[in-house]
Amino acid sequence: MQFTKKTSSSRNVLSISIKLGLGISLILGIIFLLNKIDFPAPKKEIEKIISNENFKIVK
Image (tube, rainbow, N blue to C red; front, side):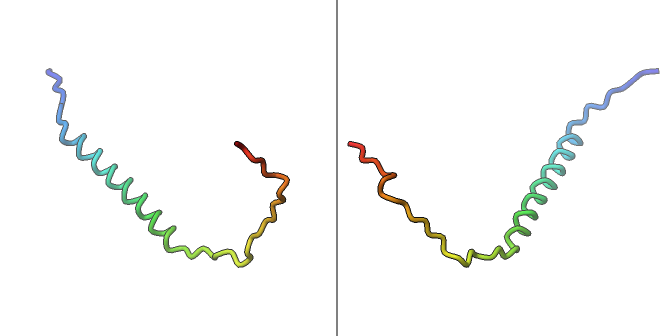
């Protein structure tokens, strides 16, 4: 009885390309869905008063 080893690399390349394609399509789908969500803009204007004593003049 002889044991034969199958060394077909085309099947391995095919499975890697399928997994890569599914991964890329999943990432693109998530980006597309996040783009569809309408995040509200802030209604309140943010204003912070900075006093002059915090500034230092560097020469």
